[in-house]
Amino acid sequence: MSSNQHLEIIPSNITSDGTLSFKNGQPVIQFIIGEQERFLIGQSLRLTGKFTAFSSDGAISTSATGLRMNEQLGIYSCFNELHISSQKTAQSIETIRHYPRMMSSYLGVTSSLQDGISHLNETALIDMNFALQQRGVIENPTQLTTKNAFCCPLVCGLLNGTNPIPLSGAWGVGGLDVSIHLSPDSNVFFSESNDTSAITGAYYELSDLKLVCEVMTPAPDQLSQIMKQTQNVFEYNSIVSQYNTINSRNGVLNFPLGVGKCMGVFLNFVPASHINNLAFDGTATLPPTNSDGTRAEVSQLIFTRGGERFPLEYNLDTIQKDAPTNQTMDAQLVRNYMSAVMGFTKIERTNVSPFNNFYEEYGSGGNLYLYAKEVVEGGAKFGVGVNYDQISGAGVSFKDVPFGLQMISDISTDSPQGVFLFAHCKNTVVSSPQGIQVIS
Image 1 (cartoon, rainbow, N blue to C red):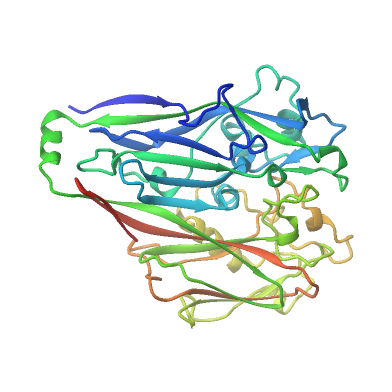
Image 2 (image 1 turned 180 degrees about the horizontal axis):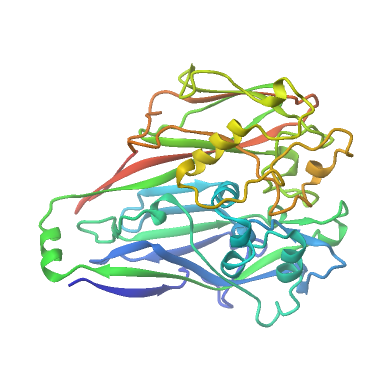
């Protein structure tokens, strides 16, 4: 009979005082799950630790400084990149760049308002009310003693899959090297007002970090059968990420994905000037906006594969094409976006709603999306995307052909929009005593 054990792993690059921070020159957290004759249960893995926010050296933020972070992301704001590779061969298995941007879409589509004010607050320092998150986390007066504790999953295709991950050096991946690249302080924090003078030295610090997970040891007879195999094959999901910009009314994007089994693609947006800028929330998922924050509504979308319309063999014309003053987000645009993050019929709860996914009314001052700091229920939830396969699970090949998007919007000023693309695909790992091969 197989048996399960729990592992507790500390970072291999921990400092003498047990703290890590981007400001102090420790931008990477590295955990090594050594090769062993066991399976890792990926869904059990959690990163635990404590988070402290400082407005300046050694000073906890108060209401006077007005320091804030994205309320929907919480601790995920701090993780800029997640990289998982084989500990034995250093072969990359999955890399997700722009991790907070991916999590913005994932959490927005798959978590409800109730999730955000209950268990996600306990596990990831998330709170869908921006003022409550600020008071309870950033301005928590006990941070110098007990600090803000978290215990969050590392959301990614490999670890979220249902297949256990073989850790053996002979019939598995040869252990795992899990590296988390930290985000710059200037893209984690921002000012609640337009004045950043009080927070120019703001930074965060992580301490007491551990990786906890569950592993399964096969029964002796099962293990002997596995070890007789010359190679082992298992399939897992993966996320491919890319970045580009658009700065015209007719924005045309082409991304060489290089994957063979693409299940869906979703994209989110933020003005490029907001990134790494303490005056703005650089992790917000905003609709296209002009330089003054006024709406630049999307009137048409065309998804292409190798220059041909696919999988929608028509132009997706939104209601704003005929009614530019309509504030409502187009239903088909929203549905396709949500379905790209997770198959629409599989979504059991969500936080995407007309309250946080809409175009600002003309003449309302034009600053709601300029600073994007007071959008209710976790902030703006805009994105576009398309699902390629909800039935067979075989996906669509983008090995030799690029993914394309043509988006017509009302961008009328010099306002580059940062576009973050995430492709959900399936990969296969073939492992042998000589090493592993990742087939995408």
